Length: 229
Ligand SMILES: [Zn+2]
Ligand SMILES: [Zn+2]
Image (cartoon, rainbow, N blue to C red; front, side):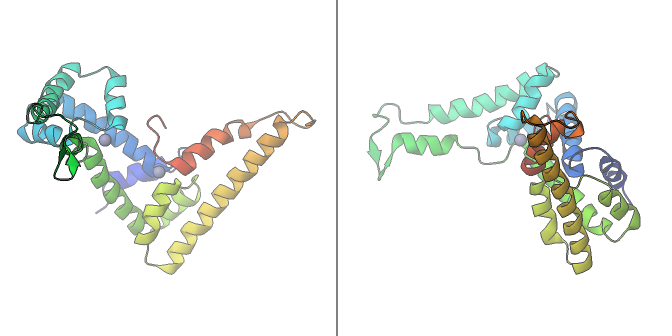
């Protein structure tokens, strides 16, 4: 049986940029929204907020920028702050904080206790989602519709290519992925070179066209999943 996620992935290959990044950006928005509107009272969500000391910077920025579900955010952050406050409460504040205790300063020990012991809940969910998409992308290489969609796409970003390649055991499929990525990046490099040439004072040909945003596409293609695509 082919899941809905598979067809969403095929659709994403028709958009510009890495299909897997697009799906994950969609999924993380959906995750955060359902967390805020449906799960803010769940015990295990609160345990996750304690262990993670709130969301990571990426997902915190997304939460903050939407300006939605602020009551849910407040409820979750009461718990996250409570954990941090309790940790500070347990600190040996009566002794000089920088006093050396068993070879390590009290400040170093406290700093380690403040460190999150679990990933941000959204990162954790997206890591699992990424694994499922990568499995689909490996199985998909044996299907003509997937292969056609990939070969007509702008390829995947470098971080996702690096995660995909080790999972492909078929040598022929591996070669097809590599050849397409090579051609995508060779075209992008040529666009950058054309953009640079046209930017120069000596250029007398056509004005800057589609290659005008090649620099932005290059950044995304090598960095992967940026918060705002
Ligand atoms: Zn990607
Ligand atoms: Zn995160």
